[in-house]
Image (cartoon, rainbow, N blue to C red):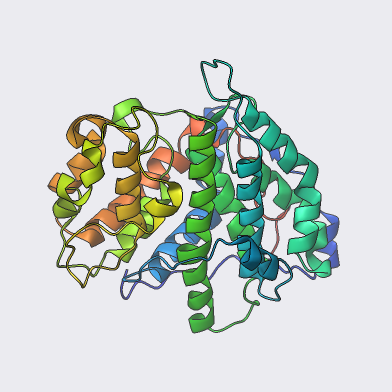
Length: 373
């Protein structure tokens, strides 16, 4: 990571009228193995993995940043000239809908159907949300952007959530970044990195807060989970950012970070099911007696805290892959690089994950469609 020069973001010329004229609503293109071969070598795949890599690189050695979640602050952010503040305000609004929409109380086997009510609320407001978020010169891009945000929180039909939904949020956020919403094209490397730090350490944790809230409130099923042999039933990207945050934390090894002594709530008997600690507490979780040099909070520790909050039983039994990483990968840098490779192989290049991903003509285009230059 240190000394590794990543390519610049794949910028999009948002003010180009010819480009705006090509915009279309994204559609699914990945339907078979041949399509997977096309996707593997596409510019859209490269833009997505590059965005995740840049978020990781920007996060090295830094703690997750606190985000004021109060309603008063949300209102202040809504009209802010700072686009990152407006994104966080949007996420706060979605979170407030989850507070307002009560789960159905009748017995339900898979997921709570009230999540469909939440999804209908998102669908009915999706255009207005983008109108408020984007400056007028970028409004045309909403036709592509809104499909990624709609797909970022789970399936309203199947009542589940998985890494494909997380991918949609990364695509939405990366698309906004490439449009120059957060920092203009041509900005120097320091300003771009500072922006990407905020995306990784403020915006992505805010997204997790909403996603985890929805998973807990509406009992969303894991989508396409590998069972105990998967990394995590729901998420992947926070492990990448979190490992990057820990890259300089020599006082705490990956093995030590996974020790049960840092997650004492695993012994709690109540609740019998569901999360033992809330999403907001998980994001700021500070294990007891950690060395002072460890950046806390961070998304790796928060992700382990989340897993230990949800699961019952021994860590090595309910999360064998995470346990194997902790046991056999000696440094955080190797955890980070390994997570990136695993994300590409097990998420971006796995048909069940990307089969629902949509392709427009500008942000993420299919190779036989015209794309920006």
